[in-house]
Length: 195
Image 1 (spheres, rainbow, N blue to C red):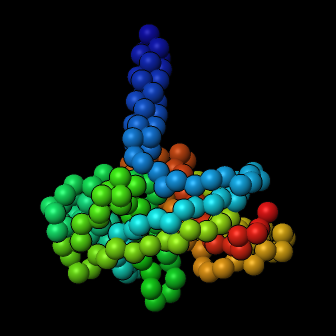
Image 2: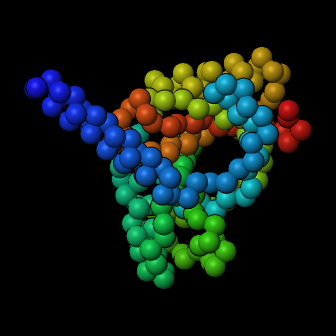
């Protein structure tokens, strides 16, 4: 009897967890793209221009950067307007200019994005373009990021494709998502004619 009870509790927890994760990901607007090609965990995508709220990052200070951007979308802006959270959160790990960005919803961009209330948050653009994107699960730590970049670069070399810029990471899930269910991506711009 105890085993059946524990099995039912475990099943209920698993269903609840799946609902929370699915709801968290589905309820947020995701940056739009057109899928050009799929090759296992790698995809070739065309992205339109995206408007971003961007802030600088220091090593081991992810929560401070996230906090500044979260304050911006929850009303710390010129219109004191609440802006819906979107996915993914973008991280540019380039040395000396590491940044975190939130993609702003299309409806907000269309009506006009309010100016940030903090000088540490700025509005920026991701220009339209074609990207090679590698999806990976697990933590977004330096070890996994390094492995993902290496796999992406190997694929580019094998297909004789030259990247146009440095890789950027895209993280889709809230921090409470179990590691094995997280959706993470590393992406890099490539020439428009890449197939």
